[in-house]
Length: 159
Image (tube, rainbow, N blue to C red; front, side, top):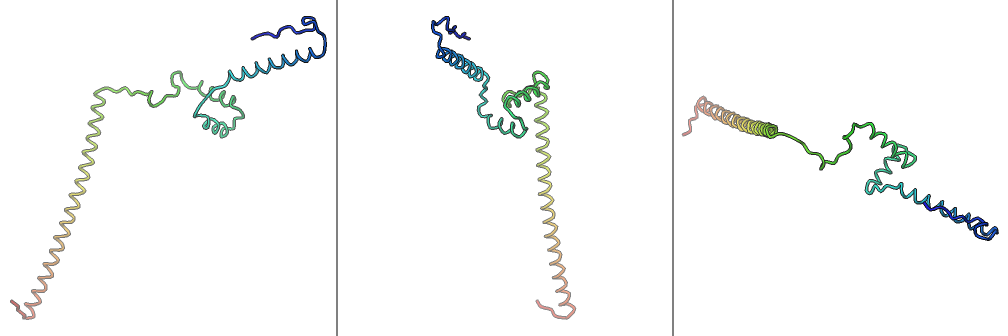
């Protein structure tokens, strides 16, 4: 950082209150510039996460962004090394060919079992329908038999 040049009355050759005011203004400006610079150096752009950040900050009752950031960092310290956040695209599942084959066989067996259950249900429905038709036919035959027996008993023969 640059130092303020010596602006004392002895070095400038003037000794008035105006020079003291100018020196004060320069020092104040330099301090303000340093403050802005250090504040700017601490900024972090979190982009699209900003709305989420603000919402979480309010819901957890943090009074400042710094307080929330420090709490978050403390929480991350409790995680084991290397277990930080990962994206789905970063995750890779390592699985052997025999495990893949086993998984495929299991899925095929499940699919076949499901199909067999569906077919069994259809077969059962057809059998139930057939039984209903046979029952209906039997009832009709019984009704016809009753009618014929009534005719024979009453002596009415119609041919």
